[in-house]
Each structure stands twice: as C-alpha cells, then as structure tokens.
Amino acid sequence: METTTSSLHSGSHQAAAPMSPALIALFSLSAGVLVANLYYAQPIIELIAPAIGLSPQGASVIVSLTQIGYAIGLFFLVPLADLLENRRLLMLSGAAAALSLVGAALSSQPGWFLLVSLLLGLSSVSVQILIPLAAHLAPEALRGRTVGTIMGGLLSGILLSRPLSSMLAQFFGWRAVFFSAAAMTLATVAIIAMTLPRRVPQHRASYASLIASLWHLLARYPVLRQRALYQGLLFAAFSLFWTAVPLELASRQGLSQSQIGIFALVGALGAIAAPIAGRLADAGHTRLASFGAMVAAAASFLPGLAAGHAALYGLALTGIVLDFAVQMNMVLGQRAIYALDAASRARLNALYMTSIFAGGALGSAVASTLYAHAGWHGVIAAGSGLALVSLAALALAPRR
Image (cartoon, rainbow, N blue to C red):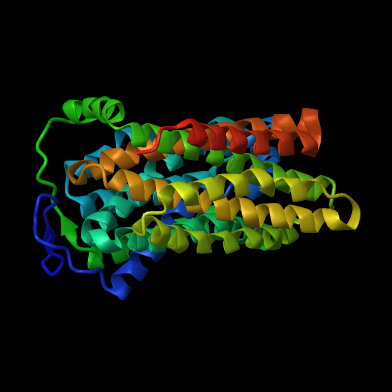
C-alpha cells in the first residue's frame, strides 16, 4: 500500500509506510468533529422536548432515533467504502450531516425533529469510513497504535460534545448547538476534500452482493460475532448512564445545564484508554486487556450509589471509569476485526459498529423510562448487569 501517491488501492501488497503525525492528527480531529454530531442532543433533551412538543417521557427517543439512524447507516452505507472511492463518500456523507443539523436547528414540530434526528444518525456514519481508511494506511505493526490514537480523537469528540452542547444551550439556546455543529461539520468536509488521500478499492461487485456479503462475513468470523456482542453490551451500559445522568444531576443534585456540561468533562479523561488499548493489542494482550476493561465497567457503577455530599463525586468517578473501560474494549475489538480480512475492513467495521450502536440505542431508549420507574438505583443495576453479561460472554468464549 503506497501512501505517497494521491490514490491508494486496497489490494496493493506493498508495505505501508507509517502515517505521518500530521495525518494522524488530521484523522483524529475529523473523527472527533464528525462523531460529535450524534451526541449534541443527549444532555439537552429536556430543553428540546418542550420546545418541539415532546413529553418528558418521550425525550430520550431523540437520542435513540439518532443512534438507530446511525446503525442503519453503518449497515447499508459504510460497506460502500469497500466498493467506492473513500474520500468522495466522506465528503457526501459529511455534507448530508451538516444539512441534517441545520434541519434540526430549524425544527418546531416533534415529527420533523425526530425525522431529522434519524437522518442525522444516518449521515454521520462518515466517521466509520474514516477509521478503516486509517487501518489501510497504517502498517501492520503500528495498526493498533494508529487506530487507537484516532479513536482517542473520536472518543474525545463523543465526550466533549456533551459539555459543549450544555454550555452553548445555557447561554445561546439549544438551536445554537445545531447551527454551530453544522458549521464545524462543513469545515471538516472542506479539510477532508483538500488533504486526505484518495483510496479506490479494487473490490468489484454490485451493491446487492456487497450487502449480501455481510451475512457471509458474520457467519465466517466468530471473532467478529464475539467482539460485537461484548462491545454492544458495554455500549448499552455507556449510553444508559450518559442519557440518565443529566436527569439525576438536574433533579437530585440541582445542577444547571452549564454545570451538567462541566460534569460531562470528566468523561473526556476516558479517551486516554484508546491509545493504551492499541498498544496492548499490538503487543498481543487483547484477551487479558478485555477482561480488565469489562471488570472495570461492571465495578464502575458502584461509586454511583454514594449518597449525600459524596454523591456527585461518586457519579463523576463512575463516568471516568466507565468511559475508560468502554473506550479500551472498543479499540481492542477494532484491532481484532481489522486483522481478519484487509479487503473487507469497511464491511467488518460496519457489522461491528452496527451491533455497538444498536446496543447504544437500546440503552438510550430505556434510560428515561427506567429512571422514572426505578430511579437511579435501577439505572445502576441495569448498567452493571449489562457489563457483567459481557464479562460472562468473554469468559465462556473459547480461546483463539
């Protein structure tokens, strides 16, 4: 694979040169900006819902629909990266995401806003075209480290999107959040157009056969099925926590939107797990590191049971440890599946990420209802239970 030319072919057998630090930084920044679009609504659903006529109980549907749209896009759009030129796909999907963000900012009816939320998730899959492209560019010995560093940027985008959203909404209103996100997305599309190398896959097939091949890949690779299950369960716990915790912070702790935004910054500390996980995977410690990540995820909910003056600190500790564990396991899984078949990386990534965000959509969808009926202790029990199921699945899986 040649990285010094303007066009990259996935079928090349030449040794890949290491990606330059500047290119890795560009990938990281683009991944963070693009993925953040999925999460801006999460901490401000209580502001959006009354403005568009949604009930408080239906507020979490906004987040859930965005993630459902993302899962659909992962399954039906991301595989195109194994068939069509990658940079063009990134530009088209990024432009569509910017238009969806503008549509959200201008919405005043629940039906329209929910439709735009679905479309926003659908068009935000560009980030999952970007990551397999980086895996193609990176040499085998540095692939985990390179993908881990870029995932650190992506995860920082996820985690920083919440405080940015809360603070913008506090001072300028929730519509300003979506207008600002649209501007950042368009700027990222322009950077991609000017700087990213082209990659033209050598795979030739119809779209129907490309989609049909997803089932064959899923059946062929047990590692893919296992890693998708583990991370889907952990991401359900992750989404459950971060959708429900603003409700707990507002109702029980009395925090304002800007204070909730500052609280969400603690989760950004978990982004350091991504490059660490990449190095552990490159060194052959995937299984042991996965056990550690899942145990940490299950235990992370315990500090959230603290009461009184310690409650806020307990919630912050839960956020830090949970985010660290989920990010680590995410990168470990990506490193494992990218090693299965170089020509099918986009489709393998599509299947992996579809499972993850289906779990995320489930966690977000039940968060408001679970909190309303079972309280914060119900959220804690459900979140830790999901992590324990993931841990049990790993323990029962045969060693490779």
